[in-house]
Length: 218
Image 1 (cartoon, rainbow, N blue to C red):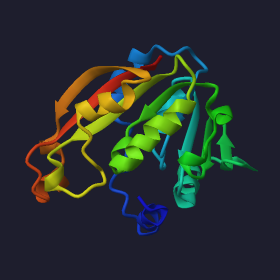
Image 2 (cartoon, rainbow, N blue to C red):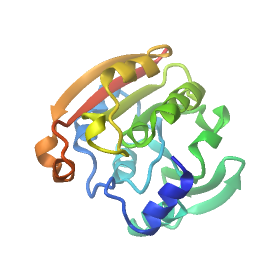
Image 3 (cartoon, rainbow, N blue to C red):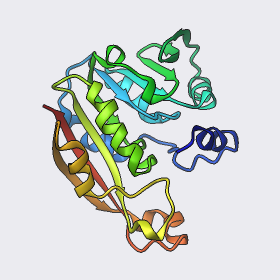
C-alpha cells in the first residue's frame, strides 16, 4: 500500500474501517491475555479507534502508531484531550494520560520503542496490508517485540477473488505460516459475519468470517 492511498482515504473521509464503538470481539476475548495492570499494549495502524480508549480504561498504557496526521488529530479532538507533543526518530509523539500515538511509519519503529510492550492488539493492521507487506509486517515489526509478548489478532476470511482489498482476506493457514516461527498461535473464535456486512454483500462476496487468535511470543 502506498502511503498516499491512506492519506487520501483520511482526507476524503473514506474510513469505513473506523468503528463507532469498541470492537465486540476485543471486549469478549481480551481477558484471555491475562495482562497485569499497567501493562503496555502496542496497537499498530491505530487510526482513531475507540479500542484505544477502551484499552486505557482497562488500566493499560496504550502505544499506537498511525500514518495519518488527520487521524491522530481527530482522535484527541474527539475525546477532548490535549496531548503533549515531541519528536523522535520514529515520528511525532502525542501523549495524553495513558494513551500515546506516534504519527509515523510503523516500519520506522525500533526495538527500543517496543521494548516495554507486554501485548499487541491488531484488528485492522494485518488485513490492511497486501501479501508482501504482511510478511514484512510480521517478520520485521513483530520481531522487535519482546519474548513473552502476548497478542490478540482479528482477521477476515472471504474468497479474495470476489473483492479487491483492503481489507484483505488472511486465511488461517497464512496466519500460522506468518507467525508460527516465533509465536504460539491459538484460534479463539471463528464467526460468520456476512449478514452483518452489507457492503461485502453488495460487492458480491459469498462468504465472510472473522477469526480471533491469541498469540504468545516464544
